[in-house]
Length: 110
Image (cartoon, rainbow, N blue to C red; front, side, top):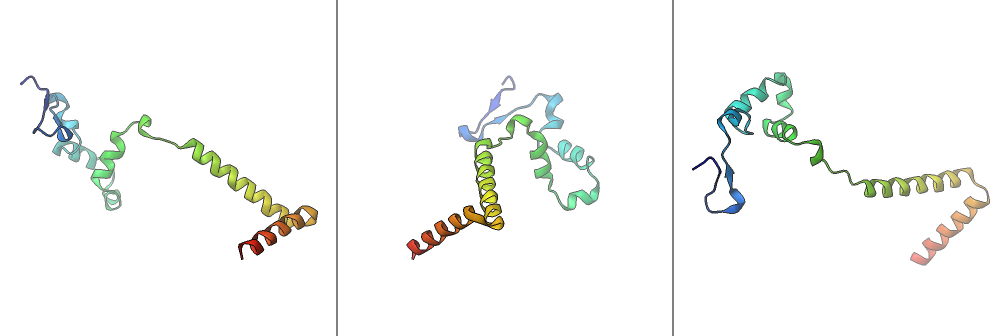
């Protein structure tokens, strides 16, 4: 066979045969499970499953996606809201104008 990919005819469930020297590191293998269990104290296994542990450590840093634009947008929105609330707290003409605008918006909404 040559050790290539094995398949049951369904391309979405193709199984790749590992070389014998990598078999102990295959996620889900008995050897892998035994090795993982030695990496944390017994008390930790009460809070984390073996599947989660294997999944977490089988990914690389490149598998993590940080939605920077979404975070930046939300941070800017929260800063504007904090500035608005700070202005209202201080009072003065800027706060009065903001309160007038909020009152008008509330009246228009019904």
